[in-house]
Image 1 (cartoon, rainbow, N blue to C red):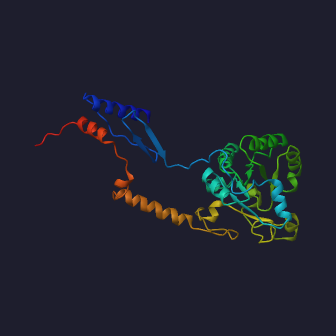
Image 2 (cartoon, rainbow, N blue to C red):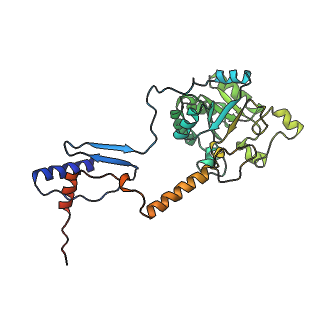
Amino acid sequence: MASLAGILQHAGASARSGTQPIRLTAYTNSCSGCIRAYLGGVALEIIMSVTQLRTRGAVSPAPRVTAETLLQKKLANQPITAITAYDYPTARLLDEAGIDLVLVGDSLGMVVLGYENTLPVTLDEILHHTRAVARGLRHSFLVADMPYGSYHSSLDDAMRNALRFIKEAGAQAVKIEGGAQRAELVKQLTAAEIPVVAHIGLTPQSVHSMGGYRVQGKSLAAIDRLTAGIGAGPDCDGQILVFHDLFNLTFSPAAKFTRQYADGAAFFAEALAQYRDDVAAHRFPSDEESYHLPREVQTALASAQPRVRKA
């Protein structure tokens, strides 16, 4: 961008002094945006079509949700709302909608990164996404999944990794899979003032030992290990869904426990096809959607072009 400013400044100075202006070459900009140049002390203004960050001190739609307020909702029989998020703009949408709890789930491996299951998700990958989501939240309670392998080898490793989610990524709690066998880890994490969300029942990180994704709690013995869970009906303390399930963005048949609130896939597909066709037919961009050089620069540019002799 600085080099373009220099070119325009040189061209303007040349036009004013009457000297031969430099030749301007065409350029492309890989970002959506605009460039405005003014010859009177060249000013370069860039307006980018990107998600705008919240200003400091921005007011949240409601008080910050905490572990204590979640407990109070449970005791008051007020259902808790929870949805996954994996990036800043999605986090903004959920936060401004007043969702109680936002989970950066290891489901990002399947719905964002294109993995076959959640097992390949690394600690660094989920920390990266947790940081992005944390920047978008002012209201919702942020929980981060500890990925497979990050708490399975030793308690010391698990503690060290869990601390990274709180200290480096801005999470307010971590989520681990497993029931009674994780009791000692939950005890130590709690003693270290790290809130823990337990994940029991259909635990995706146990996909191999379970023999695939199957509904849990269908026998008396299994029921004894579970109290309730996703898909168990409206009597749970709350409900959680993957963001992409709500908007038909998973490219697969919907599970029984999900509800599609909008067809995001059809919405995006239609818009993308229209964009493709408009570009191919020279309908986009229109003259109104294009930025124009000041008249002085147009004159300098025209005089810099090689003259074409008529036959």
